Structures are given as C-alpha cells and as structure tokens.
Length: 278
Ligand SMILES: Nc1ncnc2c1ncn2[C@@H]1O[C@H](COP(=O)(O)OP(=O)(O)OP(=O)(O)O)[C@@H](O)[C@H]1O
Ligand SMILES: Cc1ncc(COP(=O)(O)O)c(N)n1
Figure 1 (cartoon, helix red, strand yellow):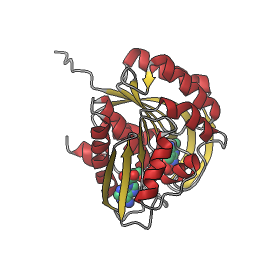
Figure 2 (cartoon, helix red, strand yellow):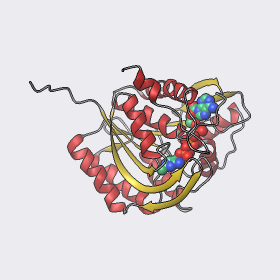
Figure 3 (tube, protein in one colour):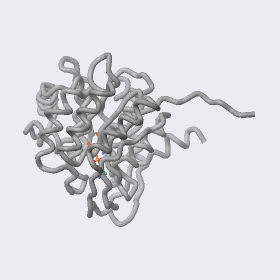
Figure 4 (cartoon, protein in one colour):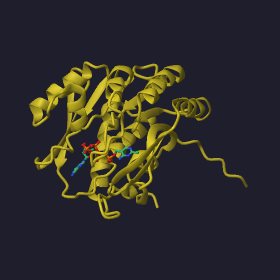
C-alpha cells in the first residue's frame, strides 16, 4: 500500500554554500529540518571554505538565483523565506525584484521575509562586495519582515557600536527606521559579556532574549541557524515574537551541543533537535 503523508511546512533559504558544511545553506537546511520544515534553496554562491576560513568564492549568475526562487515558490510554495550570503549588488537587486514578483516580503499579505545581512564569515573573510551592504539596506530592509544583524553588521549598517543595553536599543531603533517590520539585534559578538542578549524590536515594543554565554569557540553557523530556525517557525505559522522565542531556545541548545570540526572553528549542532524524534 502506498503511504500518502501530508506535505510539511516549507521554507526557502537564499544563501551561499559552505563546503565545510558548518554555515551557509548547509546550516540553514539542517536547522530547518531540525525545526520540522522542508527547506528549499536558491544558491547564490559556492564558497571554498573549511573550519579555517574562506579561500574562494564563485558567484551564481543573478538571473539563476532569481529563477531558483521563482521555481520553488510557484511549484512547491513556502510559508517563509530568508537570505544569507548574497555576495553581490547584482544578486541583491535580483532578489529584491523576484521577492516582489512572487509575493515574499513585509506585511500581512506577503510571505514573511527574514533578511540576515551577512557581510563576512566569523573569521572576517568578506562574503559581500563593498558596495553591496548599502543595497541590502536600501533594497532589502524595506521588504523585510525581520532583519537579524550581528554587532559587526550593526556597525556597518547604522554606524553604532553596541556595548550595552542602551546602545543595543539605539541600534534597534536606527535599523528599524531603515524599513524592517522587526529587528533582532544579536549580541553574540559582545565577547566580554557573561550574558548573550538578543533584542527584538518592532518600533514600539522590545523583547529581550538573554542567557548565560556558553563557553565554546565552536559557533560557526550560529547566526545562520538562528535566522533559519526563526524562518521555520514562521513557516509553521507562529507570530514573530513566538518564532524568535522558539529559535532562541533552539540556538541555545545548538550552541551548548556544538562540536569541534577540523583544525579551526566547529559548528553549532542541530542534532539535539533531530535526536528528540529518533
Ligand atoms: N557563546 C554563546 N552562548 C550562547 N549563545 C550564543 C553564543 N554565541 C552565539 N549565541 C547565539 O547565537 C546567536 C547568533 O550568534 P552571533 O550573534 O554571533 O551572530 P552571527 O555573527 O550572525 O553568527 P555566526 O557568525 O556565528 O554565524 C546569538 O545571537 C546568540 O543567540
Ligand atoms: C556560505 C556562508 N554563508 C554564511 C556564512 C556566515 O557564517 P559564519 O558567520 O558562522 O562564518 C559563511 N561563513 N559562509
């Protein structure tokens, strides 16, 4: 007898590939799977990458990136989409145009769009050309339901150095004024602090997600996994504050169970969530 199972919720990541399998679309798909969602991909770039860094980048043509988004949305359909490494201004322009075309974006009648403004790898290797951050700000932030910058990206986008709760709030306000409906200022890079505090802001209300800093160097892919877990929760129909809260619970366990890989920095682990089901 043929078993016909229900189709699970789907989400789309528009991101680059990490050959080390720690960050990028590989991290995104693992996090989406662990969070109960079928992940689809529009690949923007192939990186030559391992635990020690990025030694090569090969860009996918912008029209091929847009065509992947179109192919996924028109046939499979998704409940939410996110961006990771977008690599170039041309790809950002193509993504801005195609999300408008297929109904992904900001506001109640659009499929929720999470913009993770990835600028560099955690080791500082550039993942975006220099003129492209401005394009993320002007072309993608006004279309974003949620933007998820880390503190280096906050500095590039808003010129604010976050050092405490007051400057995190100031940054959230400045970034919100650039267009996203919600902003999540991620505190992982405030290395001296014993607590990690992520701040969600919708222009009026703030939600603070805090917990002890877990003592591990292996946080490769943490930002990708957090944005993807949020995207998965949105695809399952959660509200933004609930989706971020669920992703925050997910990422803290994933950081706690991170593991060494190669000679450099290892990844956060999605396995705890999968193992709960096997
Ligand atoms: N040592 C840690 N302990 C607890 N939580 C952490 C730790 N490091 C990262 N996190 C969680 O992961 C989230 C993403 O990390 P981070 O702020 O470093 O963003 P990112 O730079 O985009 O991530 P990455 O570059 O590692 O992919 C943080 O906001 C925090 O919730
Ligand atoms: C293809 C790709 N996308 C994103 C990241 C950022 O992740 P991290 O900040 O953990 O290096 C990366 N290193 N590679």
